[in-house]
Picture (cartoon, rainbow, N blue to C red):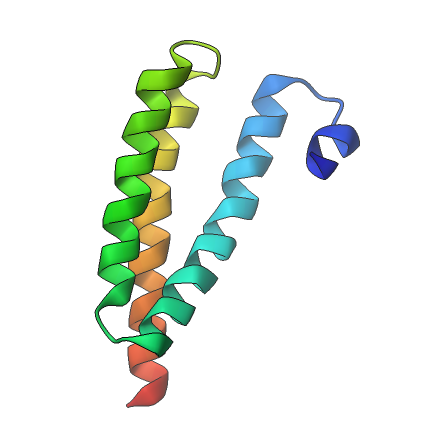
Length: 91
C-alpha cells in the first residue's frame, strides 16, 4: 500500500517495482526458512508457486498477465536462491 501511494507512474511501473521489491523479500524468506530447516526454502518455493497460480486464477485480468507469471516464476526462484545462500554461509 505504501508503494502504491509513492508511485504515480501507473500500473506498469507499480508492477515492475513490486517484482523488484518482492525478489529480495522472498530471498530473505528463503534464507530464514533454510536457517530454520535446511530444505524449508524448497517448500516455501512450492507454496509461493501454488499461491501465484491461485492468484492468477482468482484475479483474472485485473493484473497484467506478465506480472502474474512473473510472480509465479520470481517468487519461488528467489526463495530457493535465498536458501542456497544460507547453505553456502553455513558451510
